Length: 318
Image (cartoon, rainbow, N blue to C red; front, side, top):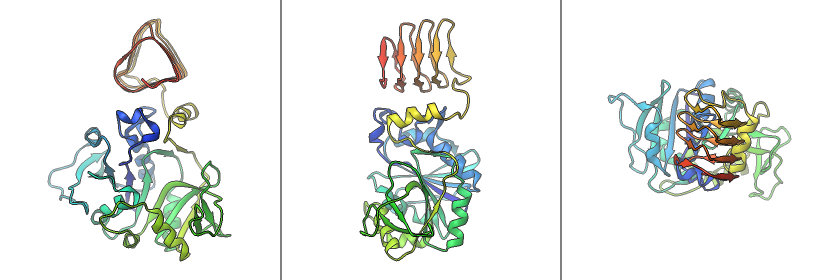
């Protein structure tokens, strides 16, 4: 499998006000966009070609990668919007803008021409994982099924019911009234191109009804991947927790400046950020370019606006 679809068009409502500045997949985790972490994981599994759908703050994606060579052919989504082709770390990326948000099923149907006749890995843009995606791809190929979901045994949203062999999904949120859920959907799955025939053209639709159709026919595959880390970063609490639990690089970026006399404890300081002498920053996250004045005291804060911050704040998004 050589291609993946990163779901990037969501509004990110649970992560506001952070997503008032960037689309959720571009929100930084340890100085890198969430989408970049997802794509790196895909590259490790052999994927070299990516599609990303955009909607909210779509212009922000112009800084993601670099323009692809102009001789590349134009790709157009089913909605008639031409894709913007980018180069990200040597890999092809096609950005498909959705003027009207198409949801998970509509977004997948929209890129049918780009997918062609090859299988595809789909990866939510707001999760971080070190799941062994090569195992998911191998399980999907071996099963011959239209779709294979990557699942976790533990988590807060056990909506997926499995058969005794744990290789077929029998129900989702009791939509078929067959069984209660026992596993968590990771937001990562593989599809064969014929699955798109179950998605209506030109409609705003979730992928779940098509999944339920397959489950009813005993054709919805599953593989349980409990190895590695898996974090849903869709809200503020989980975003802060991820930075406290993970160790993905230096917490203070080499291009950040911490002036003498400033106190920085257990915090993530992004590139170009400046913490002035006298400031106190604890358990906080400073995005790239943040400015913290000498009279500031920050505790469990996220600085994302690019404005100079002064004064005392606790559990605030600035």
